Structure formats: C-alpha cells, structure tokens
Image (cartoon, rainbow, N blue to C red; front, side):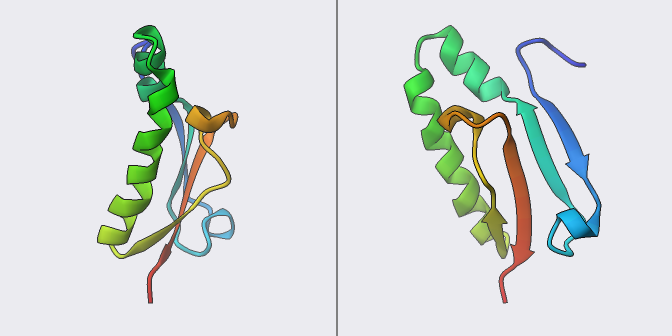
Length: 84
C-alpha cells in the first residue's frame, strides 16, 4: 500500500479476463476521486474518466469497462481491445 491518498490497483494479465490482450487494470481506490472529494469537487471527477476513452483511442485501443468509482462503481475496470 502506498500513500493513503493515492491509488490501489490490481494488474490483470489473464488473457481470458482481458479479451485476449493480456493486460488490464482494476482500480480499487482512486487517488483522483480522493483528491476531488478532499476539496469538495467530487462531482467533477467523472469528467476525467471520459478522458480514459479518448487516450485509449489515441493508442489504437478500445477501452471496455463496466464502471468507474467516480460514477458510483466499486472499482474502475480497464480492459482493452486493439482497434482493427
């Protein structure tokens, strides 16, 4: 465990769980959400979640996730597929 205001994440390498890609991330504690909440700006944290999809596309990847902590999910799950 790192800094209490930081992130807690699991790296996923099982190809069955990552659409064959072999890499995924489950964010269990979001440092950005913690920071925004500390300053009473939590309602804006989900805007940054939208950037994840944009940056993934720039890398030639499709981001697949079921939810984000900023939008009320228990975790942010990042899974990817290569854009054909």
